[in-house]
Amino acid sequence: MKPKIVLLIYGSGGHKTEMEKLITKLYSEEAGLEVKSVGIAENKSFIEHPMVIETFEQSPLRDKYFSFNNFMRIPRIYFNYFSCYKTIRKKYNVLSVISTGPGLAIPFSLLFKWKKAKIIFIETSSRFESESYAGKVMYRIADKFYIQNNSLEIFYPSAIYSGLLL
Amino acid sequence: MKILVTVGTTRFDTLIRFIDQTLEGSLIEFTFQISDGNYKPVNFPYFSFSDDIETYYRESDLVICHAGAGTIFKLLEIRKKVIIVPNTERIDNHQLDIANFMERNGYAITIRDFKLLPIAIEGISKITLKPFEKHDFDKAEEIVSFIMGKT
Image 1 (cartoon, rainbow over the protein chains, first blue to last red):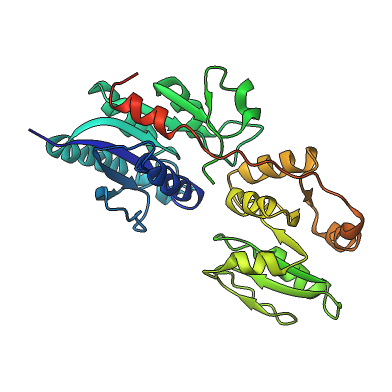
Image 2 (tube, each protein chain N blue to C red; image 1 turned 90 degrees about the horizontal axis):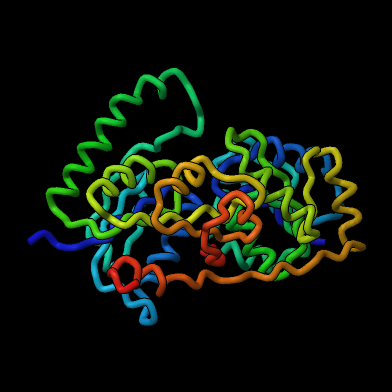
């Protein structure tokens, strides 16, 4: 039987810092998550944790610096997402997908939701007065959607306020 | 007065250059954290990154920073006076979002036009900012129960 895992998706900078804190909390004595995790990160600076057994690198869904070259890379990036999805599927039983953003969470959440994984999204703490692109889309996909700032309630009425991961 | 100017991980050369050149000869002890910036300050000390940025925070009377959430929350948590300068050289606008929020609620000063920085620095000692109450993330148990199908 394939091992059960939680899939963690995070970008660089603040998204990574937030995921690091979340991992520590999920595997703390109080929360006591028992299944291991697999990561998908946007660059090679992976989060190191004894319960994170493997991490895949994938390109960002939307590049910060838009250019023609980046645009031409899109088909290749999407193809890579799909093969990464297939690799993970073959090896693991994904119970849940958890992401702190950014948009990289969207394709994997859609693919694994279709395979009955529970989708959890935590909107970035850097947003107070507007939604992030990932947040807007993930609000429709996620089974549980958390906001770190109360002021976002007006955009995400059914979100759960979680407090800050930073 | 000791002031740290910090840009986090994304270079913000225009800010560093402005302060370094405009406030040359000032009695303020500036220190710059410039990331991988191309502009190297000539009038004040600088460094690229530090593993112990918090010590720099604590030793400064005022911190001028980009609008990075991690930096801002940390500074407000240790009750440091902060002037936020959003980095509009970046495509995404989330830096403006947090900067506007902090300013409107009186937790920090936000400066969008560099030219206003010297005045803001001069006036900072007379300004009282509201303490920001940080509520730590408390939904880990809920998430684990949900994943494991207990709720």
